[in-house]
Image (cartoon, rainbow, N blue to C red; front, side):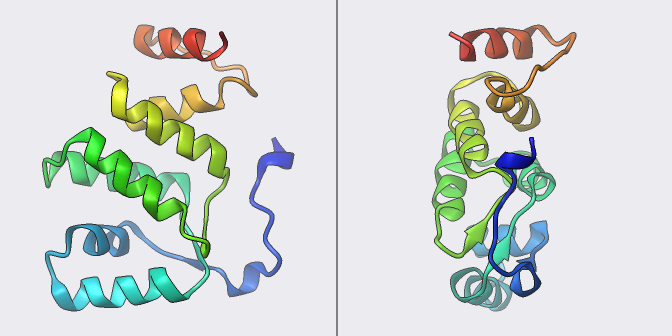
Length: 136
C-alpha cells in the first residue's frame, strides 16, 4: 500500500547499506569494519530494506547461531534509531516481535505482520495460523 511506504524529506541523502554493515555492527567480529559501520549507522540517514533485514536474520541465525529473541531485540533497537528508515516501520517492528515467539521464519513473520492491511494467501500452515491470529 503506497500510503504505508517510507515518507522521507530528501531521499537523495539516504544511504542504503548492505547486510555486511549491519552484521559487522551487531557482531563486532572485525573491529575496524564494526567501527566504520557504527559511524555510518549513528551519523547518516540510512535506509534498510526488508530484503537486507531478512538476510541479516538469516546470517545471524545460520552462521552466528544467535537466538531468535536476541536477534529480534537487537534489530528492534536498530530500526528505532532516529536516522534509520525502513519501508514500513510498524510492520517491521511487528514482524520482529512475532519472530521472537513464533515458530516461523522471518519472511513469514513479515507476511504475517502485513496481514492486517493486506490479504495474505499461502499453503504454509504455520503462516496461515499466524495470519488468522493477527486478524483477531
